[in-house]
Image 1 (tube, helix red, strand yellow):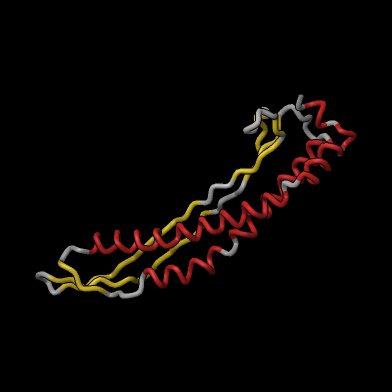
Image 2: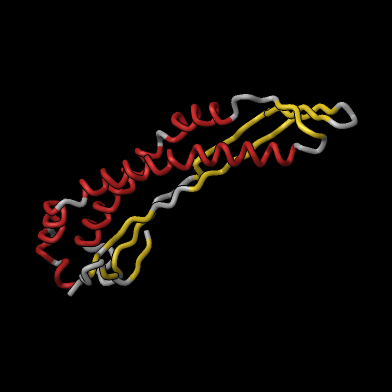
Length: 172
């Protein structure tokens, strides 16, 4: 958790907390090659590793809220709901990415000019990345939909009214 001054939303109102999540992928492609010693090389894929680097969603609450106070605990509980959504939605990444990677690497081994391994690796990486970005977009859209449901009027009203309404004292 980070502590920061309350920031303003698009309408100019102060907000008391926010959750951030920026998933990153890590891709490794290993190749093997057999050369005829002159002009041609057969390139094959020996391993592809694609993983979602531990995205570690994080959140902040406004520094105006007393540390350990009832209202800070309410906001932490609320922001943790968003963290749970991100973790649950993105846990589907490995199984969904597997089929995408398999489709992207179909058609290997390939015959290329001698010294063509770097171009083949670049092509494979581009194919996989191009196929994975829509999946990441789909997962982000799914997480956003779940998070919008969490950020309901009723939820905000419940937080505002909790702890004897103390949130209003700190975010004027």
